[in-house]
Image (cartoon, rainbow, N blue to C red; front, side, top):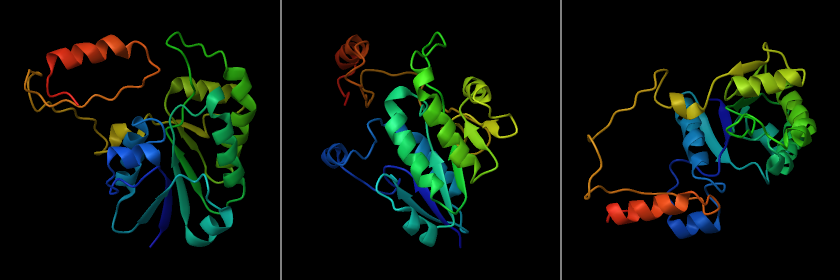
Length: 217
């Protein structure tokens, strides 16, 4: 049975309260990380696979090489200046592995206008990371055409860069289907709202939601 190590801050089957989640940072600073990592876990959950999760931050390559047959790394907007340290750490780990490595859904950071001022500073770390991955895999899965073009500009051809989108889009199979359980929200709706405190625009949205939906959490 293949032993697969998935980079994830927690297993989907690990139940943790808010305090534990905060103290141990089980969301990796962003609840969105749980969405795509859980999607990958679900996609790989077959009778033929034995899965384990790890943040990889403290993982030793010798232990991974001896215990696992494959490493799967789902990512989001990892090609950004504030992520260089983590990206380099992942590269250092991958470079020491002797088993296959698959990267799913990695993307380039960009503004709504399509320009990212820190793009040049990320190039060395990006090239090192992608090169390390391609030494262990025939291709790397990216979020969209923009990231593909960015990697093309760094010398990585389409034969090695595959646009697959976010893994969460195919969590339940090849066809994305959104099914609404109710027609609309009302005063009795139970709503959970997650807010990034550094995004000022969420202030008015949060206040509006709290005023109109008394069961808001």
